[in-house]
Image (cartoon, rainbow, N blue to C red; front, side, top):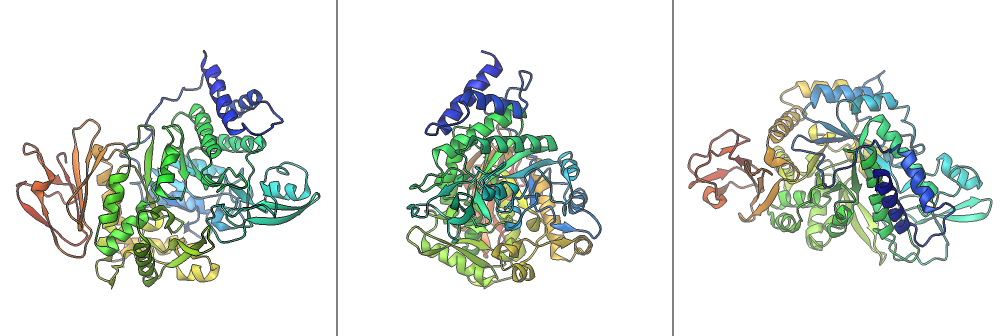
Length: 580
């Protein structure tokens, strides 16, 4: 069987699984051929290697909006590129959040997927960034803007998009549908055929696609091909868990959704061998893990449980829940890995710790974030109650104290969080405002009345340069410390995203784990004091091999006597390695 015949058969099988209960106007054979043509896959295309890891310890991704750094008279994407080159050369990947024309939700209500927002720049600016660093782009696949041409055609009942959107009846029982927001699910919309009730998972400006129509799939495969041509190599499937809807079900994590992801991976890998998919599924941890499939769905999944658990650990001084979670996490198969982060453009989600933290722990966490100036967003549960869904706060402010209140250990606590995150199994993602130690933006919060705006500050480049040139400023100190930490990390083969990881048992104040390189030549014991008290670390409990030379990579201090105890200052981390 030829490569093309094998691909055709695989796609036909995947399409049959997706559309098994749907009468199509196009045959499965023709649809598979059409997708292959759109992606320009030929018999000369490189065959994807099963279980290949397209990443290493060298990889760190910065998360940013296209206009997070501004300079008067210059296109923001140009300014961003210059900022990255000048200040964060330690980063080899960048996730530019939606850079398309949009109507709301800071980019996630896309008006036109094929264009770059003119206020940011153009496709040449995107490709210029992609030529220097690995570029991650959002594929906002669940919904688009109600101001898009497609939805305008839906309202007219004619033209491309007139049949792209999912509708239900106002009388349907939708009580089981899982919702991330409190707005009404159905959006009444007048059309030539009468009032249609359009499914709107997130807001009435974000109207959901109907993937039962294969034209929608064809559109998105066309979009993927365009992004590949522009230099995008990582596709972040935004809100993908909600993609397939069935009236009467929860309409989340349905089998067809998983099959669509598998199909997109098949197409993307055949079109560009090292391209990747990362699923953005802000859901309970056990559900999130299913998006790995059998190393045939997402290459990466967001480790959504990490941010709330790590913040909880550092404000309580106990690693109990973080350690329990880490012990329960399966090692990622080759061909898959975790995407670790602590902060992002969104808030810190609380759904991913359902079943990991009890209600009292969550409430204490929420109350502490409020004390540090944070905002709390709620969702409506199946029973109609309001439940904390997301904590909106800048990470630097979130770690300014403990449950006892603010203290003087904020900087150390902030760096401790990143020392832990950067050492964990997976690829690290760091929000631009974490690199810069940006604080809560109360002015933007007041101007927009959107809770997430508190952590979406826009820097004026000249002002930022002044801060970064002042060695006494917090922003300069944070960037310097983060750069040093990242540079050390990228030199350690034991920090490969798929290197071995085991959790250590050192009590509640010391959080530790062991990483070993895939060739077994390097071991690193990563141990952090997560409390505000000086804590003893008995070296002999680490089982260091006596014949090896051991050194703390973060201080350069050699461990000369492995039978002794060393003292860790509040929030101090050591990376004890046998290979400097």
